[in-house]
Image (cartoon, rainbow, N blue to C red):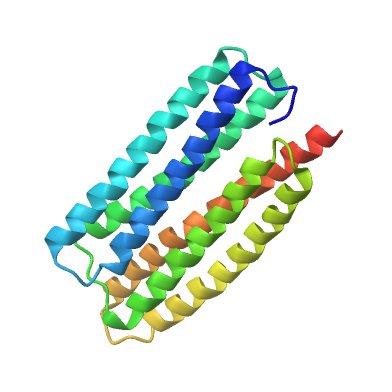
Length: 214
């Protein structure tokens, strides 16, 4: 950690890192849920609750980090950028929770034909998030490494888009009702949203790096 970071700053960076991990954990719990979509209602409810608990934990850490930031750590400009980044990261955990809600509250049954594709989609979304998580961790010190991870985030997000389109094509080729097709399409969009939002955050980090280089 750089010499220009005081005790307050170090505390915030620690909370920032904890929040990144808590968001990661929320996506991981969602991955568990999607892998087990062919299990019974009880199992799905239990796994959806785990996603919600993980999101609540991420929220708690975010509030703690924000409180610390308002105590005057970092220069005002950077503090504002950091607050914006934390809030954007938190939105990723919210997206994961909304997927879990959609599956569990609507008692959504997913055709076997697309189950492996949904697993592939959530796994790629998590890989996208992990790349932006690394970019966020490196943005305090190692701009080069952060930029490298931003590029990876963009590439993974592009790969997610391809998977998303393929699944939607597959859904509309299935012999199921139109209402069911639309419901599944919406679910696919929501899962892919995790990756889209990760890319949005990487754009934000890129701007912070540019500003810090000046």
